[in-house]
Image (cartoon, rainbow, N blue to C red; front, side):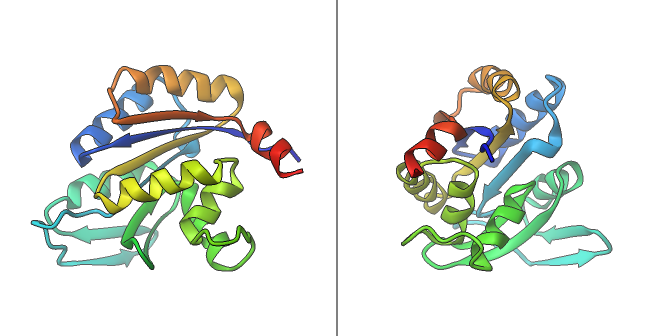
Amino acid sequence: MSKPDSVVAVYRTHTEADHALKELQNGGVDMHKLSIVGKGYHTDEHAVGYYNTGDRMKYWGKVGAFWGGFWGLLFGSAVFMIPGLGPILAAGPVVAWIVAGLEGAVEVGALGALGAGLYSIGIPKDSVVKYETALKQDQFLLIVHGTDAEVTKAKAILETTQPSQLSLHSGEAVAAAAV
């Protein structure tokens, strides 16, 4: 079975990530194929708490509206405590990828749950390390996965938002390298 392509953009602030998500939405990108991952706070911001109400996750804290907006738009949301990264908030399909990593469904050597989840969709190990480093620095990952055409369209939109990093990953290249 082939792996989809992915484009990953890294943003320094939640404001930049929010702007990029809105540009993707306005550009007609399928929101079911978009994920965001971040710590959800910076050292000067303290979350009061997280809770689940029905099918919606809630966040109390300085950037609560930011995360609440994503959780309303994207499919799936979660808070994970990941060793070495700390508390990570995630929305979109990446939640299922991380859960699969936590459940041991994906085994990728020294990669943690987040890394295993990203690797499972075709992101190479060396890129996973870069993305985990960005998260440790309180940055945000915006991930779009899908067909070559969907990912190419998303990449063109993301280029206009000036992310600090932008990488296109071919699922087929990673699948071929694993053989």
